[in-house]
Image (cartoon, rainbow, N blue to C red; front, side):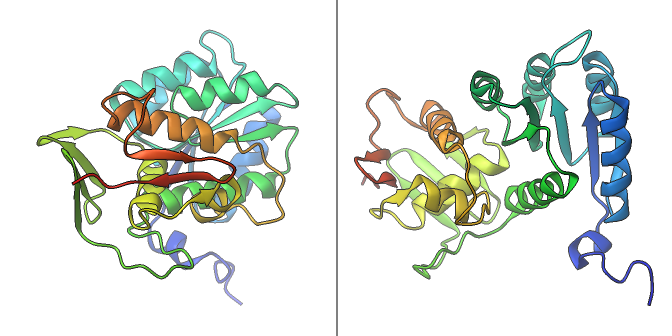
Length: 250
């Protein structure tokens, strides 16, 4: 059997580049080995300043970013990346430190993995975030069909190009933000629980125990970008006792 026969088709066809930024050499080495074996091109950085430099030089498709690094912490790196790029970011955080996770997500990270973690767990998160960040359509159990352009109030959502505009001015969304918006917009009026959103958008298994605040933070980020008054949203509503839903405005 060919050694590459078990590499997923999407990875064999297009070799995606991942930046691993962590000050622990053992973690960099393990992740570089494991992710290279399943078809990714890996570049690494040992501190925050090096991470920014490597990112600007290599233009990776995804960043795995440790929070605690010398010279510049992961938050600073995340801020620098988000100034110019919507590339997917997965942060590595300490066990039990919820504030680290929330801060990272608020700064624009797409997902997080808690240390200590298994390489297999990170591999799954990498595959999921890359797939959802470039996915052309979210198709939940409702089976509703995606339209190319959806207009609601002064917001235009182009699902084919994965772009959002307000009065012809583009609103920058990360890939995961757009996938979340796409799920809710294509099923306007239907409320989704946080766990359902994690399954459809982040591809977490139904029995996976996860802090659902990853959804709350992404909803907050979407509201800050789309709503006229984020504190009193008109588009992305809270369905009390359930989760969230999208309401179209004529």
